[in-house]
Each structure stands twice: as structure tokens, then as C-alpha cells.
Length: 578
Image 1 (spheres, rainbow, N blue to C red):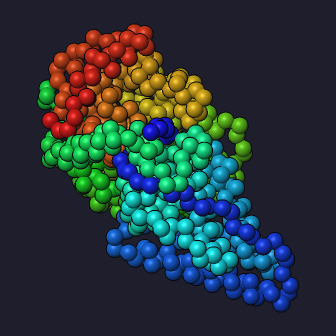
Image 2 (image 1 turned 45 degrees about the horizontal axis):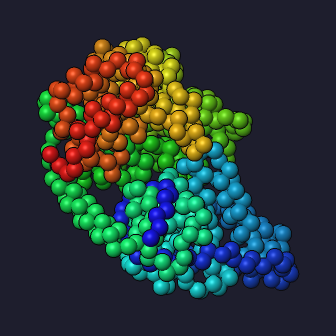
């Protein structure tokens, strides 16, 4: 028996037989075509497009399809019909005398290279969607009918170099419960779809192909990022019991659905969700959450190459607001930078975009982008309980400048006779140390504050959270970070403003007691963590408040470690519901 550690991409437990999926590159013919072959190659390309579109539409018509799956496959239809790529392919055939397969490979290769080169991992992962569509077309053109998935079933653990979203969809149809991949990211489209379909995945196992052989018996522990190779009887028994226990916990946690998120000291904690894909809105009703504490609108770019229009955005926002009304829908304006929109907006290249023209800075530098979004949000506010939140705010002047643009949009809509909530709540993200230090002046002007701990930790400790080399320095409960959080909470309460945490800390049960003890009144969490955090909320008592209140966070990191992982452990270590 051997154990292999990798990255947890999607949680879950499964056992099965290792099967390597052959993803060898296709043999693309490199020859030029004659003048009399142009029409034939053009028709071959157009027929491949038509057949591919028909396949995708057939899948979209499947009644059993998950909504996230439908969202991603719909994006593939958009890519397939992209007028710029189609124009590029036809030009390569008609003007450069390239065969259809080569034209497709080159045109899609250019788009893949563009997205792969983006700094932000969320956008760079879009390259996988373009690869998926390209490969689908090439299989049609090259008449490659062999199916590497033909022998897969519920007992298989397929192993990929890099998996495409449509392949995740196919695994789900085949009943596959887990897979491994050599290359993959937690933020990729395939990863998002895997979590939505509850297919466990572990990625980035060192020397995977040297370690694991086809036909090996495997146990996949997606939660721990662990793979057990050729498990012995003891391991099999352990994981059989773990699976049974997890099912019992899951059923018990669901009983929390109707229970209020009150602490034992009768403090109400508003519990909202973080979402990035519109179809995730269904989780508000499924979990009985208090609404959406963070809608990351930049995720709208996952399935497109250009900026969505005002009407397109309005349609999305108004559907979300109407669906969960009267519950809260907090819409964060685009947290974007020029590196992500170079194809749509003329922006100079930045050596360090994380410290550059991004978030509210980018929106203010391109007021047409901000005004389009704010008008769409305001129009949607007539149909529900909508809040607006600005990202990357550094101080009150930053916030007031953004709010002036909002006021101008509101006045414009009023003159046009449009309905909207003129008193729409407007808040600020606190994710930069200067915003936390300036939180009193921000609290005077904002209707609410929301602490984004992911960036707050990154900027406070000068550590790139996506860099494995310095990952050990990314300490979310570092005393410096906690001091900034406490200062922000104190100033929000001083001016009677709502205060929430929407960063990763809110979704980690070991931090929930600490944050509640510090005085947080709203936790915006990932849907998968909702019941875990709600259970912790219902465990908190007056003793917790006393323990945290007596800590001034001038302590050493070791002392804070002791507080979080020892003193407060009884509040989050119990299993199941209260």
C-alpha cells in the first residue's frame, strides 16, 4: 500500500481501478491546399461546426443535466459561434490555402495562447474551454471516432494529464465518481463543474505516471487531497467507515436547514453565500441561506471574450434578485484589470497587475465600464433586495469617487423614468490595509463594510497566495491581520454599520468562532461550507465572547495558534448538527 498527496480540487470519497485516458496530440496535416480544394475544406469546417453545435444542443436538452453543466456547455456554443474565430479560420482556408484542420488548430491556438498568458488564474483557465471546442472540431474533421471513454464506468478512476469541462460532463453521465489529473486548478471550469457534479478530484501528484499504474486499485480522498494505492484491508475498512460517517453527518447537517443561525448567547448571525456563477443562486433556497453576500460579477467573463452589455447584465442581475427576493443580493462591481480585458479595452501592459490598475481603480479609469454595470444593477434593484459593493477601495476618497458615478447613473435613470431603488445600500470591500486603517471614515460614508480576507492577508503580509514557494507565509490568523479585522469591526459598530466577512476565513470552521467572538454579524460563505459554519455558529456562547475579547492580538503567532487550534477548538471540532 502507498499513499500519495496532491491538491484537493473537488471533495469526495471514491474507490476504483486506475485507467489512463490517452490524450495524445492529434496529427494535424500541414500541407497547403490547391485552389480547387478551397470549397471542399470550407464546407468540411462548416459541417464540423454544425455537427458539433448539434451535439452540444443535444446534451443541453438532456433533462438530467446539472445547471452548472448547462452553463459551461452553453459557453462552448458561444465559442463555437465566435465570429472573430470563424472569420480567422475561413481567412486561413480561403486566403492562405491552409487545410481545414490546420486552420482550426492555428486559429484556436491563438485564442488558447491569449488566455493561457493571462496573469489571473481564473481567466487563464478559459483556455481549457477553447481547447475543448477545438478538439471537438478536429475530431470531426479528422474523422477520429475512437472513444477513450468507452470502457469507463462507476468502478473506474480515470487519470488525465489535463481534463476538459466536457469530459467532466461525460464522466458524470458514465457514473464515474472520482478522477485524477496531472495539471489542474481549483478555479478552472473543469474544477467548478466537478464540484457541482460531486465528482471527487485530486491533482498535482508528483510523478503521478511513475507512481500509479493502470489497473491499480485506488481510494480517492478528495477532501484531504490523498490517493491510496493498492489499499490493504485496514485502509479499506477505515474508508468504508469514513464514507458511512460522512453520509450520516451530511444527513444530520441537513436538519439544520430550518434552524436559525443564533449563537447560544442569542446573537443572530446573518449567513449568506458567495457565488460566482448565476446558477449557484439555487443554493440560497436549497440551504435556506439569508441571501448572497458576494456575487463575483467578473465570473461573467468565464464564458465570453467581451464586456457584457447593460441589457445583458440587467437580465442576469434582475433574474437573481427576483429569484431570491426579499433576501439580500450583494453585487460586487467588476474586480478586473487591464490584463484581463486587453482584447476589449486598450490598456498598457503592467509588470505587477496585482498592485496595478485593477478593481475600482480600473473601473474609474474606464467610466463607461463602470456606468454600464451600475445602470444595470440599479435597474435590477427595482425587483429585489439589492446591495452594491465596490472592490479594491483604499480610503474614503476612493469610495466617494465611485459613489459619485453611482449618483450620476441614478439621476440619469430617474430622468429616463426607469424604476430603481434610489436608496440602494452601498458598501465597500475592506481588503487593503489602508482601507482597514481608514475604516472609521469609510464607515461614516458606507452603508456596510465587507472584509475580503484573501487579499487582506496577501497585502498585509506581502505574500502571493497563489505562489507555492511562499505559501507558508500566507497565515490568515496572523496577529497583524487580526488587528486590522478587529479595527474594522470596531469602527463599523461605532457608526452602526453592517459588517461581514466574505473571504475564505468565513468558510473555514476553525476561524468561525474567532470571527464571531470578534463581533462579526454576517458571514458570507461558500455553499459547500454552509452547514459546517452554521453548526459552529449555533455552538458559540458568552464564554467564547469573553475568550476572544480578552485577546488584544498583540500576542505572538504561537499564542494565536494556541487560541485558534486549542482554546477555541471545542466550538468547531464537534461533528454533525447541534
